Length: 445
Image 1: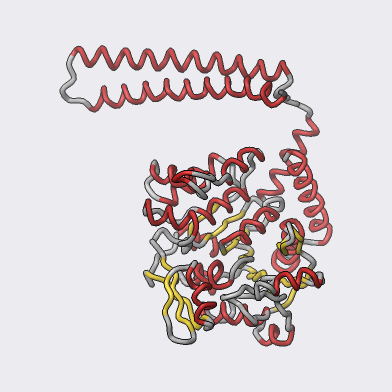
Image 2: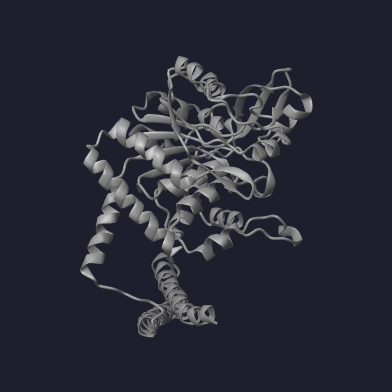
């Protein structure tokens, strides 16, 4: 009942906004036609003037009634506006804190990247997520095939991770249809596909969706080219398609020898390259090594920018191995795989988990031929990479996942301490205020 009472006045406000938009549309359409037509006669002149007058009248009504509805919301307690100077001062200070936060670039894909972004957004608003577009499976793959757009799934997850939106809106955008032709399709994917239809390109569609959802920072596809991921296995077989690579490795009992993309000269988004050049820190992962992290580095301009960048570069190690991709890999093997595809020296630190995993969980993962990733510090040090240990995992529905809050705190400690060199007092103050922002946003959610 309370939800219905809240929805009624809010729907009225949105109705007047929609009406105002229609009035503006009338005015713009009539004005453009009036000035562009060369064969304008008296009948058309009066018609366009009539449209402009109608548009102005509609706009006036919508503004007047919209203000009335908003005041009604305030009076009835549905919307509260506080002019408390202390609260306002704190809000401004918190915004300034986030704006002055370090410039962080996160590169990856899958659910791992979006999980990490959910924690990072409480420490800085200078975030750029560079997301792979090689996905060809599931609902993203079907939209890619049917509509010829880049796969929206990973990008949708990153947008939602950085969005400042109501839980109901996130639930709606993550909703998957259960029946009919849209079965298993995510509403968020369809929303982004529709936005692509009314935009000049996919990058613009992502920007528009980000604006609608009040995203902190930016989400960028690594390239606008129709990138296809391929792998050469150790037995010489070439496998095409991100979703096929792990399956074929299992079927043919052969490991991945190398990855490559088509087109080989896929052009990176310039904004992504600029973000890496200007970054204080670049974070790789977390996520599937061969199908989420490395594909981004195969876009040549991204790999080159990463080598030249003076940012601190952190790789977040996977906690468990993945069947068909990283069987038998330790942390050192993960790093070596990145180096073999993009060259040495692009990782300064690797974040590894220290929390002991329960034996029952290990047994559960063994059924999927997955084991805990081994941290061999001697091997890692030989690769000229420093190990940073931390407890940043959580158990969610019986599965091991990265904890976004713990992981973000660890990453920011590395960045602040190793790169930005703030004095200790400022670091303590920064983390205290970031924690307060996080708690306030969690309460809101």
